[in-house]
Length: 86
Image 1 (cartoon, rainbow, N blue to C red):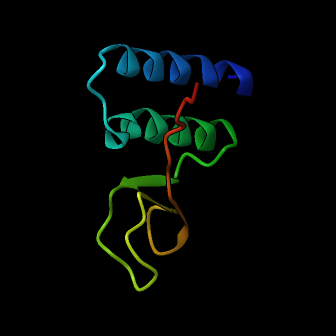
Image 2: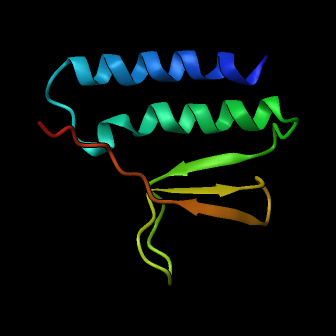
C-alpha cells in the first residue's frame, strides 16, 4: 500500500469523529493508533505494536507507546488535537 493512501482512512476517521460534535482528545486516539500500525506494516514492520494510554512511566503519562512487540520500546507519543481559532 502506498503511504499517501494510508492517510485517507485516517482523515476520514478523524472527520467522522469530529462530525459527531461531542469528541474529546481521546476520541481521536483509535484513528491515530490504526494509522501508526498501518504505516509500520507498510514499512515492513508488522511486528510493531501500539498501546493506547499505557501505564504511566518515569517520564510521565504518554498517550501512546510504540514497541517492537517483544522486548523493546521504540518510543512514546503525546497527541494533541488542533484548535481552530477565529
